Length: 188
Image 1 (cartoon, rainbow, N blue to C red):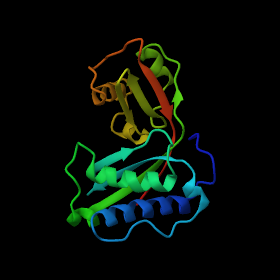
Image 2 (cartoon, rainbow, N blue to C red):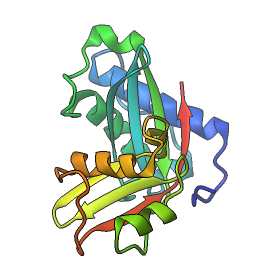
Image 3 (cartoon, helix red, strand yellow):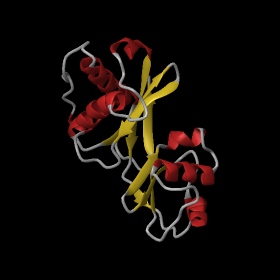
């Protein structure tokens, strides 16, 4: 169960992928701005992540945890952010476009988890199912459920989340908050 309501079909997923592809193509000088999408569901608020891969390797991944703009705008802008603003990678170059595949993940609203220590969090988390947000004061990080494929051990998964948030391995404090979310994903 993803926690996402509505008729999320393969066709809608293909539309989201086309939006992401058109956004990146236009940003690299190969197309025109957004157009041709007038479906009402695209105007509804949505939170997405757009993941770019080149030859199967991660090339960028940026998204929104909370829905605060239309689904169309969120996918359009996150595709560009993944290509040009993921600080782990240099900006995508025009010559790479043909080699890049895209994945769009639609997120459910985050659900806070009632845990006061790492052991409780590990008991509640569902490997392979949950996207996870780790927060402590101004430090924050998230992993999509797909990351469980590389980090299947919950303790290791949490340690990588802490590191991504700029916190030391094994860190826990009373201010730590963990939330989870589900995703529906489509990939080229």
